[in-house]
Length: 441
Image (tube, rainbow, N blue to C red; front, side):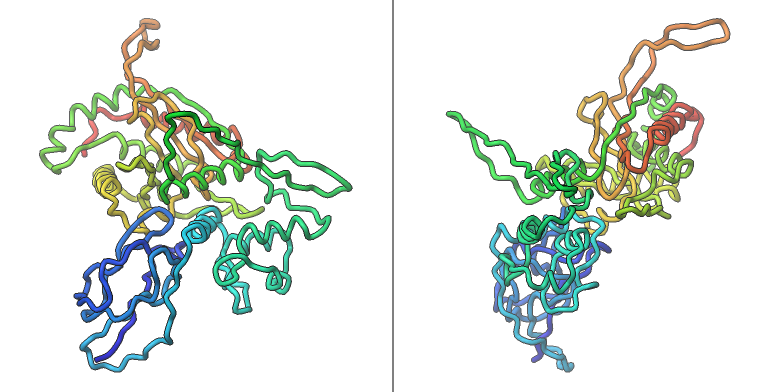
């Protein structure tokens, strides 16, 4: 009998670790090949690790709540396979306190452009991407970093440790990118000091109920605050006449349902228009890395979807510009259905270069969405409503009942100026307004 390791699988290009939520098998129980063994969580998606071997679960190498890096063994399976297997060194069960686990996951979530710590760390000490990013920003060398006392698990340096070290380091100037956009600064002897922003004290009244944020809500909250701190947001609005589009959908939706077995919604139409506009204005399809601009080759459009829990998740349509409307409709329906049932894979929420959110599905006419970092723009589409509108005809102006909707385009004013941001949303509206009533799908 040979013992074989079950490894933490690779779950996406930017995912380096995952948190163990719950073991589905106990030590001593038999596990079949491809049978779910343990539930794990990444930044936004919960998923299961299937066993790659059939046999007896002889050892769990990590406890619930532990953070495990991709490629590391999480369990040992005693297999009947007689092939020689090199047994890894004994790994103690690691119990990670809940606050520290949350801190490590959040650190990765709020550092979208950070590179893995191992790329520059030549010591045996592990540093999270956030800590390494702060060290680079503040000009802290690896030798200096190695001497910072850590209060985290196994003596790791946490965000609080390195920020405290920076504050007590001396009168060195703090880089502007390390200061939240909304934070006031005090200038003294040519050095810039951060002023701590404290959350307000919340008083409790009789009958108030206290509810703990779940893991995903904490990540979303932190990601939104980070985005507003990193990017100066500007929002441009356009009102579009989508009467032809509404009439076309009414004409084709029943036949489409009979033929394809699913609905044709407005979402794939919006995504098609956005993909076309991105090809017209490729500088919307970028990211900011320090003082560098990363121009994306692929057009990967995320669509914000609400889950039954009330949390938000953003599945991504990869290479949206290469799909026809039928392909987009099938992909959108599939991703939306699996988002609602929490069946998305980690790779399906990674790699987005632009995001669409439909606030109209909640009856809202417009919104001012927050950019999904590290992207630089996001569009909100509002509810389609019948309104009186002035039309120009060869016989003069007339008032008619038209289907109208607002498009809201939020963008990062560091790299997207008002002209580009405004022209882009206007171009999307043009594609929607010029819809062909005779188009086939």
